[in-house]
Image 1 (spheres, one colour):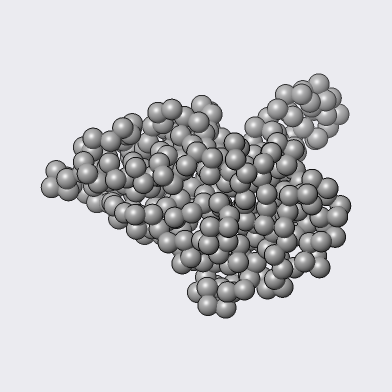
Image 2 (tube, rainbow, N blue to C red; image 1 turned 135 degrees about the horizontal axis):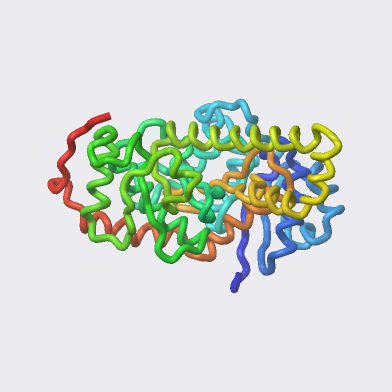
Length: 351
């Protein structure tokens, strides 16, 4: 980073916090310079951890609060009763301009509710969405929404498309990413009114966005497009299905390679290739989901991750900050609104 950046950290969020959080900061600092951290949490727990991690101690400032948002807290409950929690105070630091972004591994619903309340949404964006990236046969792709919005209309999907395209350019470094809408088929007449209207809107708009059209479930892993747009209900199911399938495959592979002496010998000979495979599908590499559409950078780490995964979430946040992510969304969406004419859209829904 060319100039010093301050990142706000919910040090008490996550299954293994605060140990995992402090270790994650230490791990992230192996590749960082010019970054400082505000750690919000219980000083009695954080101070001894920083004493054991010299790099983190040198760039971290503790902001004490004994209050936390529990994993089972309802979003409304957390919003009302968590004003002095580590999560809320970390978000406030971004809203007050003390920090350029926040990273938390805490309660997803509470984080979204608090972040939306404090940071608000970008101009023209109705609902924030959860976006992250994951491996495909062609490299990596972005999917959104992954659970923030169960029901979406065409405007929401169009907004997700614009924000996802900006995410792909900033985080994945793709110069001209392709965008597709997840549907039950690739034919023009497939899908409900929301996906058809969104597709026609993206097709007709004079926006520098490469809209591929509709994609299906098997296109996700194939990497047919760089950005996959869907509602939060479908996206969350697709993501969890992919994660479960990957775990099942890993279980079967381990079971097969340890079933007898010869498979074990084969595994030993293929150790290098298996290590490469393991790294390629390691979920920690893809940890760090962005709440896109907020007027501030907010990154959600998986609650059960370790230090390596949390460090990656920190890098995602810094990438978004360094590339003026939100300014790009503002510019692109303003251009889309200027070019889109709803009267040009004709829809014939057919499931």
